[in-house]
Image (cartoon, rainbow, N blue to C red; front, side, top):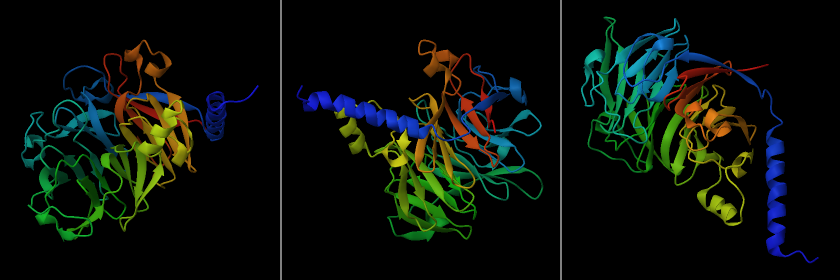
Length: 365
């Protein structure tokens, strides 16, 4: 029988797709234990025991070396889940607005429904940085010498918008809806706004590097000086940014490459070689401290995926993916992630009503 192009393509793609999945499954560990840490799903606000606390949707998360977890929530608050199992409010009144000063009376503006305009990161001194997107600011939360927590507007107070290759003083910088923030191992603060990836040094010098990655859904830094960006526009992909501002795509195809595959009938997303793998509108990720491993999840995939050794692997599916007719059984839908130096993943679920909140996911040796 003569093989026509139409009959050849499905077989070729089946072989490619199967091989990519098999190659991705070579990594270990592939099993994890899951433990509830904090939160119940209920509309409201409640501090106290972490397991019984109410947060609303959590939009961003970071962690300090002592194991305290800081989360930015949709109700315009910054909350703490401390190492002793307590949840309490660090900053914000719960009222949408803009106000600096004592942390308990400060105001943030996450925006309305939809994608987050809050990111959060921490420096080596314990100061927190929040990308307050609607207000066009990077806000800083820090402890004064008196012991009082305080909020100020760290960046975005000026009227100067930079172009790639330009630099300025921090006090002159204007930002346009910065959606995320990262702090690297040198305590430089990074954010993305328009055509710039901004690096802000401790001396207050701002550099604009050309944003060839796209709109940042989330940014995180490793402990060796690199910053990572997850984008959804124009490409669903991961990028690495060096101290000198070099931007490199490290996982995910370009949108044009994906469209070429779907036109030929290949199902997406797919695992396999990192630059040949595809992602579908991920909403969160985290990077290991040594920069060797990325974990991405949520969005419209409903799985947790890992990028390691230049290969993408699906680690596990959430409850909705396992039982498509039972969305509310989902474990991991919609929330941010964080991985510590021991490889333990902290992951938030955000869909009602049967959500276990923050989960601790530990690899089995």
